[in-house]
Amino acid sequence: MSFSTHGVPEAESPPDTSRRVEERHQLLVMGVDIGTSLSKVVVSAQGRRVAVRFDVPGGEENPYLLPTAVSVMDSGDCGECRLGLHSGANKHYDDIKKPLIDGKTESVQLPLVAFMTLLFQRVQKQIKESPDLILSRHLDWLVNLGVPTESYGGGSKGVKDLVGAYRRSAEVAWGLAERRRAERRRLGKVKPLTIELCRQAMEERNEEGSDRIKVFPEFVPQVASYVQSKQRQEGVHVLVDAGGGTLDVTVFQVLPPSIDKGWDPVWARTVRPLGTRYLVDHIAEKSGRGLALSPFRHLPSAAEIAQKVDVSLEELTDIVEPFRRLIVLAVGETIRKAGNTYMALEWPGRLFLVGGGAFIELYNDVAEEFTRKDWKFGVHRLHLPRPDDLEAPEINDSHWHRLAVAYGLSFDPDNIHRIRPPEDIKPVGPGFLKPPDIPPPFV
View 1 (spheres, rainbow, N blue to C red):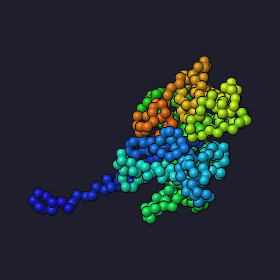
View 2: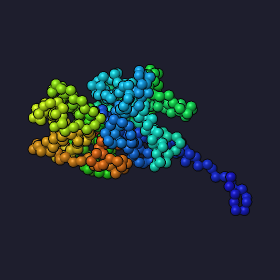
View 3: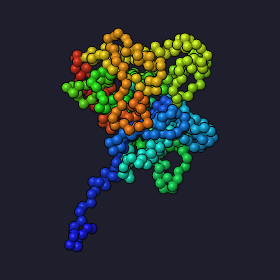
View 4: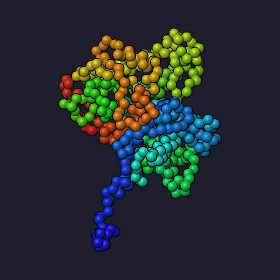
């Protein structure tokens, strides 16, 4: 109640319920890129896109790159699980994603649930305690998760199994993280997370997180990270992502305003198990020598690898050549498919090389080879421009692309769905496009 200057009570103004509702229901979007070796998270909050720091042992010297690994600190399935590679651990799950790419979804689902649970808890805690963000007491979270596949599902059993494993693991992990948060709030403490607790959560088949998890093929947010930025340019683009597990090649186009149909077309798409982990396996197999290298750090130079497997540089070049040809074939066939199918595309286009492989000589040589080729579908190589609104002060402009998928996933799902995959685009006559129906959610 308030009083006038004459001491006469004034009528109370109605409560500002709109502000209370806004404070009660503040939406945050968590973009999660689970890489074969390193994972990244970018959170959209209050119009800002903030890269999440992870200071855990075992990864590169970069606080935004989290080793995709779980350490079990004591014996058995009842030992405490921790993010990263901790010394003194009884067991390390450091190959969580690679079996998924190879189609072995069951063997790693429990470690994946443990990893996601710890990841969700870490991100929520860090964002909520951030001194730079003014957040309400009650936050509504939405999680956009990237999956390494070249389509939105279709009838492929392998794709459906992979997507199902990711989605199911994320839903269970979210529910488990929420129950643990409630337990801490109620009791002031929480039991350590264990593989056995993850097993129990999987068996309960709790659907608590089902409405918060959205899943997208990784190329969709990666393209979105460029086309949503102020640095986007019209024309054809070739995006080559050389990660730890897969080599992802995407040919897309930014349409001019005169024919902008509210969506951005992807003309061709290829995913192959040709990432750096598979390169190391190839060298070890063909040389007949073990190659003990950390999957969470940059590969050493060619000279250092040759020394480790006890061959000359020339012999190493011969060993790697069949693998290099597969990379060239994957990139070349994707560009040809786009160019031959949609003759209206204007070449040459722009080529971006991103991912951990962008710092490795082999993948750079392949990218440069395509800029030198005197062929119909030529490209100019450029660096992927950094978005103005990405808040990641400890990563420079030449390395920011490691966060590109997570950044693209931090957008609202409706904006991510602006990216149209090849299967949803139907050419009608030379140079004209018929816009397809809105693609269904990737489930």
